[in-house]
Image (cartoon, rainbow, N blue to C red):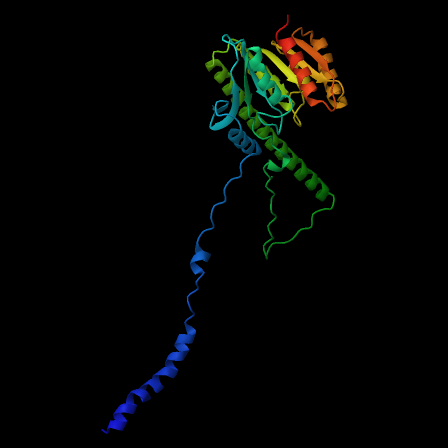
Length: 325
């Protein structure tokens, strides 16, 4: 075999093999760089904090650490603000319950009162309540999906008169299911709030409070009254309501609660607010019908443009009722 033939033999073999290998290489797709990403499970979304939790976190950063207390209510931990009385023998403790969407240091009523009570010999404990539920948080009612008839099944037309009746029955069933879901949610909300009030009372006891007063503002007044109505405690001697409001669809009503309690109750009402005044009038009339001598209503006047003077007026009237001379 000549040298020329031996040198060209590998080239000839490569020329014969390469066309056969090209279709195989073309049929094998390149590995997908993103395949691992596509098959990996999506990351879990973090749960959003309640608005009350965000407000509590902000207060914890802003206020002195000595005021901030983390209390336990069932499985939940919540923020409360404590200020001890500025005398050697405290008169007691006032537990302040804010209204809906209000923090434990809300600038109207809640914050000013909690800071003023210690100078008068009362410790103050302001609680954080959970967010109020809304209609969007109600569980959805499962709808029945109609299945298609089998091919061999005979389709029988229903009389026209039966269609509205079925629709009415479905609407009624859905309405009952929604009402049941709303009731369950209302019970769960009340349990969360009551657990926090009980935790506040236990903390006040730990601070050797001789007397405990509940003070509620806005819808917090409703929850304070309802707590004493459902879970009366000999440790709580007095109840103060300030600009009381009922939560939406509240049962029982505030007029039923506040006017039948066994503890001394002061209902502070701003007579300039027509809506609140109508509800306050109903409470006053209910107290007269029940002949409840423990219920007292105190009228206040708003001072537009002078919030400091209005807060001072409220504090003086509350203190005057709390410590009659």
